[in-house]
Length: 315
Image (tube, rainbow, N blue to C red; front, side):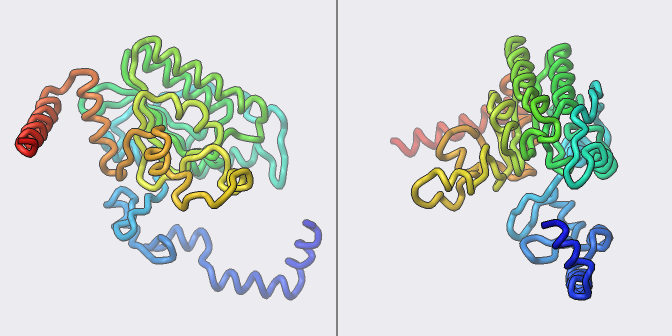
């Protein structure tokens, strides 16, 4: 089939199609240099989007946010310390499809500025020491392989050593097919690491961002003490079409969204807009760890006022 497509592409007809596409659609470079970004077919000023935490002010769609941008948004510009991890053999199977896997890795590292799909760091939330890991979906679809597993293990080990909470921010298409069984093994390794964290009596929280699917949703993401999620995020294991093929009747329109998972399965505790997640994590950590008396006092006052209102209403 590929040779047929090449034949067409090299023909006069194919050249005309390519010229039409080039004229109709801007190149990646033109898109990168443009002042605007498309959101559901409409142009939005990039500066306005950045001011709103990369959330569309019109439709509330949560656009891609890199781990570095998220950390700078949460903790302040470079006010966090990266946790480095071991780099295992990058391409043990010498995988090649339409492109060599080793070349895909090089491109991903260049495009994201990361060594692997997960960036972990030490930081503070509400003056509470924490360790945080975040997945970058632009690094081969946020897929997990050996390097990512090593990164999570290093982050969890740091949290245990410092006796601090661990927060995991997910965005993944699942386990990385190019490394086969070695990729699937990371599900078990990450699960064991989180069990060690909990054995040490430390808090583990997860923030689900879009999309979170496949092996990640079936392992580390499902082990949290408290699970937050960004509004409208896709959350699933198998694809919608696969589930539909095995399910009689039509699936709900909001099936495989975090809102559906919260309402129907109870897997998610809170669905929030992006700007509300960081302060909410801070409040909950302050309560659980009994730190930051100002925050606790504020929440206690709110609870007391709510109780008084309910008492008045009941009487």
